[in-house]
View 1: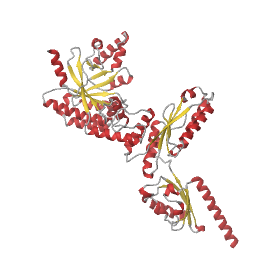
View 2: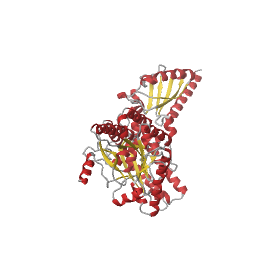
View 3: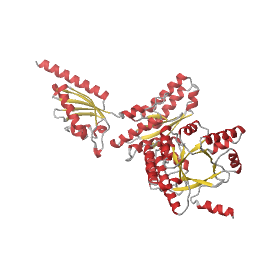
View 4: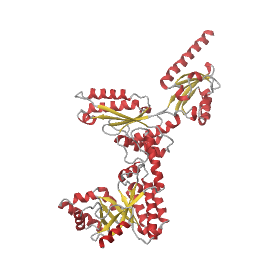
Length: 561
């Protein structure tokens, strides 16, 4: 009998040891619990998961270390394991010091009644866990297997949200393989594919969760990683790999730029927009011309700097803390002012004018352009009302981004604004700009029709020779089109181009749409568009943008005298 007991005990110990060995292959931390769920043995990476050293865990109640919301689940699973002998893989989180939570942790184990009714539990950090909607939307670069730009921004956002709860820190490295694109083009396809796969593997292996790296351009790659990743060593290994694959043995020079990608308390929606914008600007290697708070110099925290600028921009917009100037649009051929275009102006902390195109690009890329557009509508209606009260009747055109027309909240807010300002709407016009392509043209057309019900005339801005312009003109009911100045200049250089421009004007007139020529700066350009049949013109020849439109009345009076 003693031999049987001894043999059984030896067999159980071997099974326990076998589980321990396999557990360390699978997991990061192994725990042995007694029948009361108290820890009697711990080995592995307990600091990162439980926030305590292994030697400090003895006697601790295991369920007491869990985050509160997971305690009932794990307690029940342990009771089930007592009956069934094993515990299936479940995901839990632990409470750490400073009110932080551990990363998501996968938990498995089994119960051995012959070894003192003890539980054996293996824990593994489940850092690869992503929400199903993110996983389902991920797109990859076919050559390297790395995430594309937008997918990388989504995954980085998820990692940064998790980072807040775990207290971990990450950095983002932009790696440029100089002359990599021409090297790949001169390689055979099989060798090129192998090289691409190798570069992708290097970056993924050093990134957070082994899959937070992306290809951002022909020669640019980015990855989110722990601060202790040896970037210099990684550069050398990639250089060696590329040199060995290069038929000429030359290879490439790898250069890297590292920035912080930690975050303060940023709402997830804003964080997602800020991360994508930050990655794009980081790749540009450019200082911003508009830095409300010295936005995104290549030092400091990139995402937090972006979000700081987003907050500042949002406050200025919502409080109407920006300037507006007005440029005249005149009727041809007599040059009488028909209406003014309202143009927004922002200044940085030093009082320097921010280039409008950079400002618009920023607002569109962080999905805040609709707030600016709505603010401009509010500001313009308020201004029109003040002019009417002084006896001045003036029409004003406000720019609305195609991006805003895709935002139902903006469109509903605009309608509500119009309903409160019926007395000023006859003086309001809207110019639809194409800085951002309108994806759902039918939906945009429905909102434009709704705006026109208030008596607001619509102008399609930036109209040139692109196919999308004609799709918009066909689908949307508009009153004017404004032909891009560069298109006019190019067309007027040749007889064929001038004929095309006349045909364009005739087409618009056939569908009761009037035509505006912009960026008209010389008498010759004015004469050419007049002969082509343009109805209106805008440009420095007729007046620069001014904050005070009375300057135009005084200028006209002076010329008459």
